[in-house]
Length: 182
Image (cartoon, rainbow, N blue to C red; front, side, top):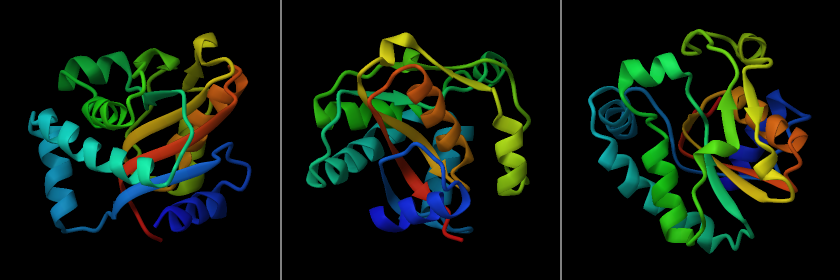
């Protein structure tokens, strides 16, 4: 599925600065992954994310990816207060654990809040995220893996990759538990 994930992102965002992408499953409604995702994101069970992140880490390790650090798609501070955690952080920590890489949530940050993306088209998602994610100078020269819970249109990953490249990252790869097939 790695090729399919990359193709889907490049189809909608041909200029995305992502060099490789992996997802464990196709995200379908209703489905097992949707149930697990809801437990992690909305029902305060982030520990499931770590275990699933470890599975994702094994997929990436088998692919032979050369990486320096793992980071996570940041959520806005208000959403963090509301939810109490970033649902993608335990996933990223599980990936980093398997790959024996440092996890650095500070490589990306939200510069402003955005409205929920759940009902937006790919074009509207990209507009919603324009300028909303910034990269840290600590990403300079690193090969960074960005982890999120689900890749839907690729807008969030594309925005994150652009921010990291602008901050000096050598390359950016993407990973998620689920990928929404078009």
